[in-house]
Image (tube, rainbow, N blue to C red):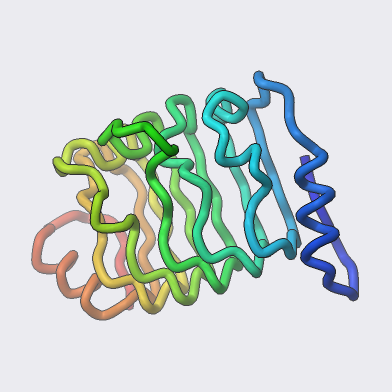
Length: 186
C-alpha cells in the first residue's frame, strides 16, 4: 500500500483522510508508506487486530510523524525500515491495554536512517529485561540518528550491523560494552 509519491504540495489533512480510508484487510503482510505528510498515522495503525499479521513495514518520508504506532508489539513483524522521518522522537512499544513486555519479538531486520530527532527507543515504561528487546534481531542499521542517546541490548544472534552518525552517548556506551566485530562509525 503506497501513499503519495512525487508531488509538490503538502496537505496533511488530506493525507490523513486518504490513509484512514485505506483501512487494510486483516491478513495484510506488507505495508509501505512513502512521502506521507500526515501528522500522525491512521487510527487503524493503532488497532492490534487489524495490523497484527504484518511481517514487513517500510515508512519512508513520513516527515510529520513524531511518535510511531506500537509496531514493537506486532508478533509477526520481521523487518522494519524507517527512513527520512525527521520528527520522530521515540518508538511506541505498547497497544492500549497490552502489557506485554517483549518488544519486537520476531523482528530480524531493523533499518533506521534519517531520524534526526530520535532520542529514545521507548518511553520509560519499555521492556523490563534485556532479553526481551529484539530477541530475533540479526541485522541492524542505524544511520544519521544524531540525537539517539542509548542503544538497546543487542542479541547475540546479530550478524550484520552498521552504526553511523548516532549520538555520542550511545556510541560511547556501545563501544564500552562490546567487542563485537560488526561495523561502527560515529
